[in-house]
Image 1 (tube, rainbow, N blue to C red):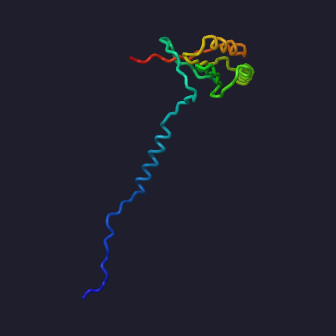
Image 2 (cartoon, one colour; image 1 turned 30 degrees about the horizontal axis):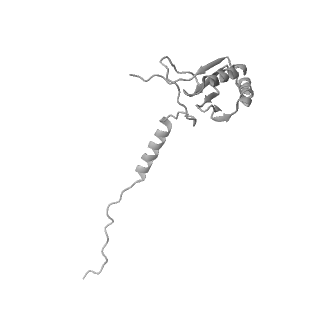
Length: 136
């Protein structure tokens, strides 16, 4: 009679250490190779233009919504303090370019008023943003 206990078989063992290493390597790869485009939180529909071209980003971007709200770098600002703030930015950066992104439904008078404020604050080159035509 054999009374010794039977050894239980351990079954199949899966070593997941290498799988975890591979997952971390993939995570690092995707984090390093992905690019993030800074999208403003302001909802604008830019007008379409057949001759629009890509412009260089400037230290500050001015947004004008269809409702007439003005944002300076995603911060709501009133027209009274806008001129002073733009003069400070011009003195700090020494940049003479400014980008104005106005909604296609914004009033023409508001756009002209903002261009005047921008130029009076020292910026000599004002670019208006538009949607680039879709590739056919």
